Image (tube, rainbow, N blue to C red; front, top):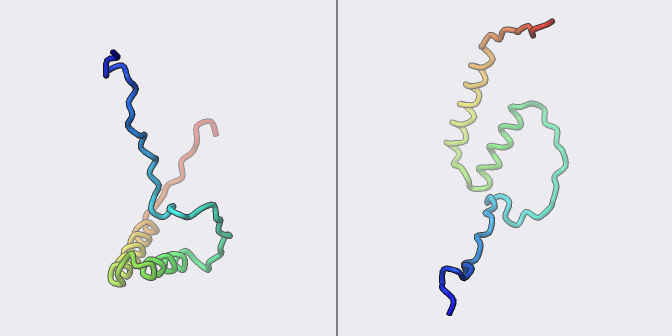
Length: 87
């Protein structure tokens, strides 16, 4: 008689989880796109979330405004150039 402790586990191994957007995506590739500006890319991305039913319009508008606000704040920062040692 063999002890149960010596037998290998019969539990199935868990399958790796894939992100929701990867399910059924296959190996399709998208061609590179050119947009007029970063703002145009942000607006297109925001509208695609509305079309996909991921967000409500109010949330999209608030997110775009928040993004513009963060952009203005970063643009207002003064960055200093650092000299590298030995130059």
